Length: 352
Length: 155
Image (cartoon, rainbow over all chains, first blue to last red; front, side):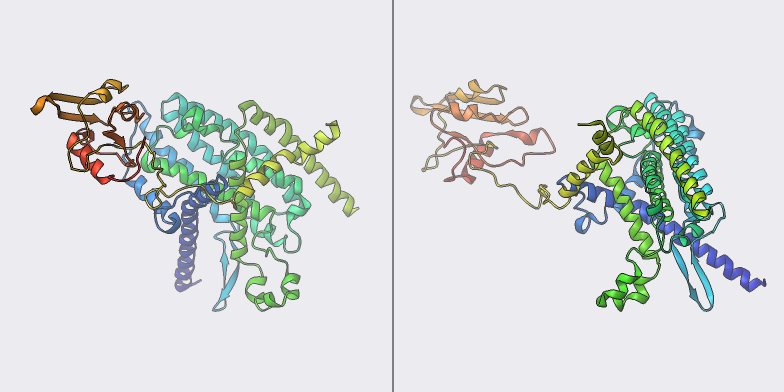
């Protein structure tokens, strides 16, 4: 490789990093808008309406407001840890997007451009590891704030994240047994004809529940139960530091959606099967553009999956703490284990 | 409900799906929100808003300075000072309503024997200082002139 090639590769990688960062940042901002709007309409309200047409600039206004807000550090807080905690939450949430395969890639000037930053052969493991790293930020925030509500919130969050990591891992293992690879790109390629959700419906349901609990969303939002713990682990935070926690939460939700799409819903593979395009005459002319796999399918699937989060949030009340633990340890883990057993059995029987 | 039916309903999340169906149906209903500064509510004529003192058709004040409104007021927010005028009549010197204390019950209007006091449809009463919400006789008369001939509370 000569010097010119090195520059091209570096520039290409940097452009990819910027693209993924922009995608993640924009999504964390606009998922709040999506959530507020969708939830408002489900509750017979309108949601944000004043900033821009239908409140489309609301995330920007929120961001500007939070940036100029006073940043308070409590007098008895552990300053170093207090400052570090939001970053510990935010950074793992953002860098896990490195392995997400957004699209199948395309060829320009004889060079193939992949729409993912890295195809790690341990992609799934990497994502799981980083999602558990997020718990450190929460625990550090709760401890450093020196406030009992923050402490209670962070303790709840830590135990919840640890408990629900197991069923989530079990649900993912049953998918990995089908594909035989930990690379997210290989998993997506393996679903070209049939999505994994058809083979693993039980694992998908376990994954949905564990994913909601993992990101501390209603009905599992005990760590930040607004009406009992004020705001949970980030009570003492304000301004931009608080916004970091919020961004981390939404980035985590986006990551859970991405993982669900990659593992169960076919990743970049089209939602509308090819034969529909071929049989319907109007769609037939678009087959070259829309019929194949692409980024647009991936993004549509993310938003559809994200809707489940909002939908459950509007529908269900919060669980009690013992109910949460019982659901995790006594129901989801046995179901996940049984699912693995059945998957293994079927695999062995079909082979023999 | 038999045990099997209950089991099937639990496993398929039957009750949760029913609830989700309901919330989803609300997604397509018309929101009830009124975008307030742009869309204004229709205020009924009998609305108990800002007070107003009325005038006779020749321009003189209706109020006979009896002080019954001040006596009836549950919060004591009406201050009225009177003195003796020409031809042995009673004249209003000052008439003040402190709107920060007023609870808009309308007893003052009901107490008035000559219907000099009424309440109008003004409801946007937020101000930046306390002094601005101390309504004097002139201000109340001006509000009465604004609503002259219109149907107001207790008419």
